[in-house]
Length: 285
Image (cartoon, rainbow, N blue to C red; front, side, top):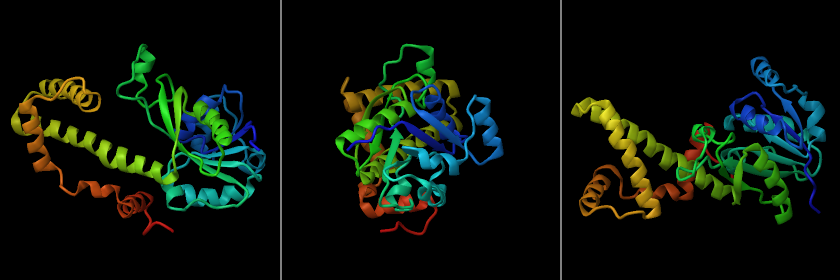
């Protein structure tokens, strides 16, 4: 039987993500409690008109407990929070790493979920200044969310999707995957690959200016425009790459990319990168 989710506690409400999701919950239909240990962060929460609650008092009454804390702290924080939760409640974390590594404290009579924002798409149609300014999402620009709720039924996931759509809103769609699949999305796809490539392009820009003497503004203009067209052609086939461009691209692959790069999608490599992120020796099995 599906439980209607009405009461939410945010642990770490004064952190970066805690402040973001709390702002979206503040005027929602949910009863929300905001918990924060840091005195400075407590002041930030209170400055936004949100009251600080004692976790020991409110967690036991909550249908959903959200741990908006850094991944490396999730083991210790969940160990302190999980025993206080009521049976049937949902523990929701924001990143898959700790869940994949089995660092979250376990209890047989509660449920576990993870939900991570996809951030507004590079192809998103934006119409207002607020939408253009919202690169991260959760304010004005529409985004999708990737989430895992393997213990839940379709009805349970639909109910939790309502919570997720508020906390990361505006949300167009919640995509349900497994914890392992979510870990392949982040870090492997979007951090190991996409964020690395973005940082690498910035290094290439700096090198063009430094070593080749190209004026910085000219280099930025050329690169920024070509980032857009490269993505449009590669992902949406708006136009084909020219024959000369294809030759230069192949040369780039030969010089920059290892032939065995796809090994990052092997499970053992996923274990390695997540262990490094969590600053642990190895993933627990």
